[in-house]
Length: 459
Image: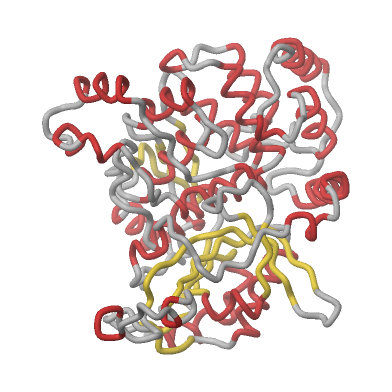
């Protein structure tokens, strides 16, 4: 069940610098990219979310596969692809089972949706090859997902301002397009999980959002929002979901990116720089933001700022089409001071490990206080101005994708951070991360035994 008790609102969604952030240790995680790829391949074959592993191409599949290989021959190797050609990426997806995995919504495969991108007209004259290349980069390596907006050249700004209606705030202040602190960390973290565990559905979203209709439909099980159908309908109304048909147990929901996302996407197509969002990042993150913010998101100014905890859990439920429970772990007062926790760190760790062991990722929101950010230790720190050492000053969403143990048996979480300008894994020890966790989303069945106890503490 989605809970609406998150009180930090946009704290989780700011692009911030963490003074004591532990460094990226991608090499320590994997030893080598070759070893990592082998582990990823084995893992993907065991935990694909929508279907059993299938690596056998039918005659129709072979035709599409060969077509894509030939179609993408002249596509330059992306800086994000780790020197892998499109052919190598397709081969990896085939062997891992991801290429022929199926979307729960329309039974299409990842291959089907990539082929559609190549053979059907794209909106805004997007380059099909560019779209497919970006999609392959993300599907084979979700770590490249980023929330970093690209800059808008001055001559493009002029054209955009002429296009915008008079009531758009950007019309009055073009500097609003210069997004330096992106608020899409929750959306980007959902994108990581989406591509990692639901490749066919991810490719379907890309194909539909970049197609002429610029929209994608989800046949959502009402129980994915709540076991109580009436409560599920209430949630849909609260989030202003675009619904088109209801049955006793299902509802069709329309998802679309905001119209200005296509302006951003075209800018990225022409002026993309390494480390910035790709066309695919722009469209997927916009669609997630639109769904979570009651269709009020504007990609030009990146407003409203971020997703609150309830909204983030809602879109996670949409993507996974299963009930996600968001547990709030921290006690925070109205003045944003961290007072304590609603359960033990051991229980938090168990929730995360049980979910990872079930084959899913965990999207978490963590916060930093004056003390844990290092600010309280600065000579410039002034409690009267900056607040108490336990005052929450900012926060972030990341995706936990795996874990390991050190020689002493201590747990280390392997994470993807879409805001660290580094398309590699980052490691956080449990001792470092757990005290900072405000909330995390889990499949409801994994945490249902502890949910009531934690919710009592929250209340």
